[in-house]
Image (tube, helix red, strand yellow):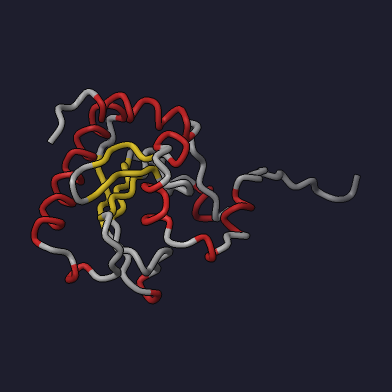
Length: 168
């Protein structure tokens, strides 16, 4: 055959991300209002913030923690919101350790375009579980992440862990 066949990794779910319509409003404001937590993958709600799975994760179990209040800058958070956000982040780490046994975490935020913020108008934290060897050649060469588990399956496992925790 003269030509070398190329391997193709199909990811049709990415088209929704590529063609994303920003006219739908702020996802961190709109998703909690729907009261369809499983559908929008909200795992936990607290007084001032909530946890949802990242629909386009860097790694399995990639979570987002956001305040309910719409604000872009970390310095706009009240003391109560900051404390709640950090307590919820701590809970996320505990739940992820129990369910997925990661060896480490990247926890952070991107504020502003220059820092790579995907949703720059609503402050939020990323919690990315990490394992030795989790960055294979795919993200480096193919600019593609390989998720070993369906989002819905990860959601179910993590949701049970969050729900088993006492409120507050």
